[in-house]
Length: 267
Image (cartoon, rainbow, N blue to C red):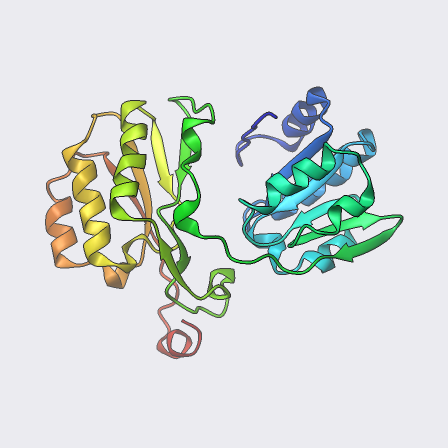
């Protein structure tokens, strides 16, 4: 198994060539709003050049319209809906096993193609997020690469335009677990850690404690990126951030709407 990361700065031709050179048996894509169109374009052309390679899509941008994507894009062999920590290993076992199509039947959350027909398995159950292991102790992470980290899953808001609103509630990792995970990035002098928490500061006390810990353990190298909700930023957090090393933190704060009527009905 090989992990490859491509960015918006890479051309389609470059990504296409790199995938072909890999001569992979299966290629799996994480699909988000910012990459789904490019992925569908690349996969269509890749499949023409390597028809025996299996294509798997997963991620939030395909989870909620999986059947429609399977119907419209015949070069997609599998789609995993929802969380993949439990279903992805089962699919890998099935793919590397006897190869009998019936092996896919018992994998919840899986859509697959067989003899020209699309099969939709029952939805998978929500995983216990606190039991999901920290992946970077077994995955090779390079110090000059961006590492993505999730300290909580879910969003407290119900914005009608966002897929995050479909899943209700927030599932945070224990704060001591988070600190232990982050200490590994600091030890490795990782260039940047991007928190993929939907709303990092949904809980002021929790988010402030994490920021304070990172300031106390600052290695002078690692930068941490967070997505914040602007109106939840507290005076306590601002006072703390005033003391942080320049460049230690990077914040992404989205202005959803300045229209009060829209904010009332959709946010």
